[in-house]
Image: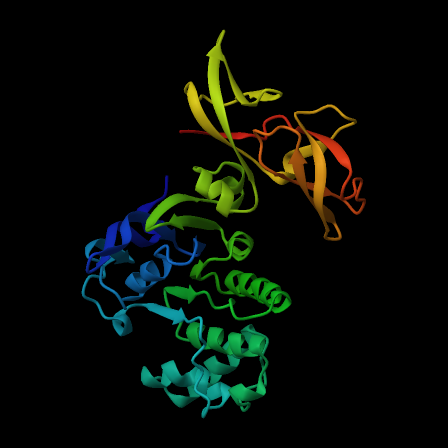
Length: 354
């Protein structure tokens, strides 16, 4: 149970319509004080619209957005205790780094001595101490990103909102910025709300996260809980990689068996009603055997990735589609074109009723 005093942002039955199109369909979730919370989902699912309703750039058609216990309906963006880091950084090219960071403080009427001190402090926080006099075009993409972050942080808002700020960076720089963001969050103990379509970024950064699909929230929880116990086939498929199989559940003598194929069945650990089901099994939950196992077939693709090898297995059974398997470790025990057999770890399958 979460204490009401710990709740910073509260969305209650929030809905957003544009003419005949419903972008967000009656969603509910809370963001706690000091939390790094991410909203993740595919493009067009409504996550940016949700961010804009929290920031005040959009007004809900129905429902309520509260900040610090106050209803924000009708409160303009500049009157909300939030700051937004955009996907496109929008740094002022004619201003120095220091002037960019100080811009919000100057508009708020903060005196020059305090401005200089805070600009220096926050540039140090983002590892850009001494960069006050540089121009944005003299900085790398990652450095510009950190300037935008310092500019958003310097006003010390109740919550910092991020709209896919790392999407334009290359993979290596994106990973570096993920580490920087976590460090900054830990140092400031602030509240961060991060919107992204990148599951890896969301799982790396978040204390908790919400998975959004087609305008609705499918699941809210800690990244590891969502990964291990997805609430729907969509969540299982979107967060990480998985194999989805059609199956049939049948109960006999108090035990429920799930049949995926004639030679591929298991006893369900959770309570499942008899009838059609969907089964999720993560690629890393398969183990290579000496020839026995429910999945037998030919390796049609092999992707070596250093500490793991990804395989695509074409099963002998015509009722099964290709199966994705991940083998951990530096050794790659099976080659492309070879035959192999795999079993599934106990407790690995997650079953969804139809």
